[in-house]
Image 1 (cartoon, rainbow, N blue to C red):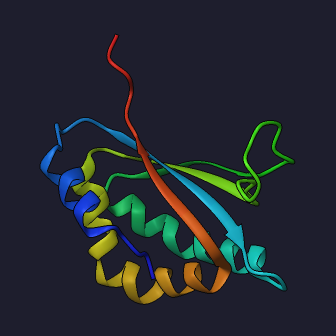
Image 2 (image 1 turned 90 degrees about the vertical axis):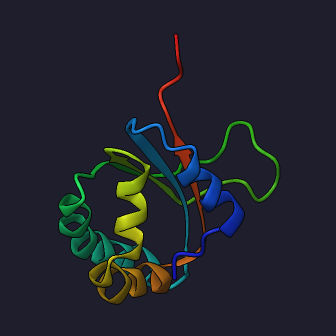
Length: 122
């Protein structure tokens, strides 16, 4: 299941300025089929996130890290653009996402980090 840090999630929503965000997903797959299950997850999740105005803009496999502490190499990353923070929250709480997509994600991953990103002010 998508595990959110409650205090961080509350702040994330309270500080919503209505601007678009990109969610960086750092992904570590389960052995024996995790990548394949993640592909199944993407097939189910893509139309769900689209209902919230979001778009999966990039999914790529991780190569060996060039600069990282031990254990910080990731199998893959995904970037998902949401029109605003509320859209992400609504998608994460959506019954279709929770019941259909989230179990596939959980079955695919041993570890994941969700890092929201926003365009820096100039």
